[in-house]
Length: 131
Ligand SMILES: [Zn+2]
Ligand SMILES: [Zn+2]
Image (cartoon, rainbow, N blue to C red; front, side):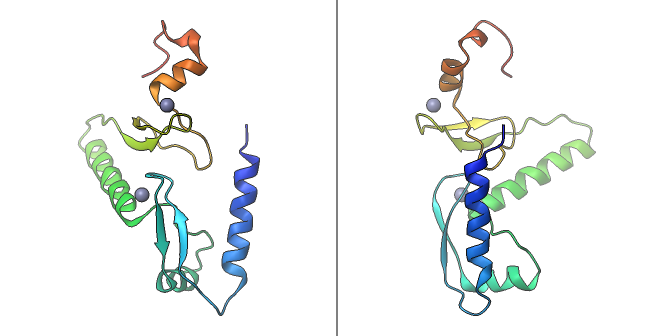
């Protein structure tokens, strides 16, 4: 199932963001990891444009750094032949509680905490389908 509304919003957002070549303004963006607004500064927007990047950042600086550190740790673990469990901090789409999931959620796709997930999939409670 495709998150139709989200991708349309993102497209619109990109068009609005990149339509105007001259007047950059600081923009508030919602971080997909921590769910907090962060400022995408004019300087960073110009940097993005100069790099030819067409998508605005998805994460605040702290989360971006955390993600890079996780990826580096995973890469290092893989190089060493160790299996690494990833843990990504997210806010549950239903109860908004803070939880962690063992995968990188797709943008625009809701992520649920364990109890909300089980509420939606009660047949999994006795199974091992999770984890
Ligand atoms: Zn963040
Ligand atoms: Zn929940």
